[in-house]
Image 1: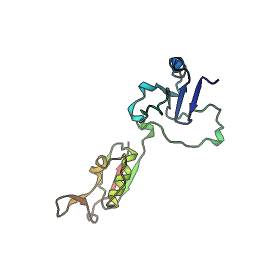
Image 2: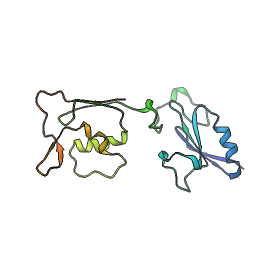
Image 3: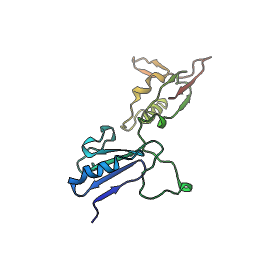
Image 4: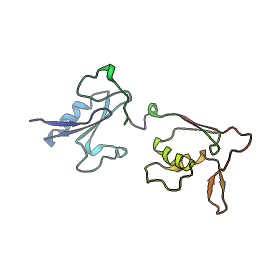
Length: 171
């Protein structure tokens, strides 16, 4: 009979220990690795959104930047990119260049990828967007906006003549 069940590979793996009295034993073993971070079920950071009593693993492994969790040796020729690394890791931050009539000529720091969807929706002046985790407020400083007749902000209708309209977002 298996003592543990491992679910997932890549950037996250869930370890379920069949005999709950042995969770600490297995945690001590896996927490020695420098390739990942290990958390016991009650110590999983909230940012992972794994707090449901039936989904929460006994041990969570999260791969460190550039690492891949697997039980089998990987064939380097078949290695592909993956997603799911921590957004807190600066190596996972990206660069976005924007150009257009409603983008200011500024450089800002890192942004969350989840904020891009509402940002693009606002640039396209879409009236209704589905509810998402992203927040338009983090990119508010990027918009060129004007006050409309109702006193609410809206996107500038056209470029301001003679201005450089390149907005640069980077680390």
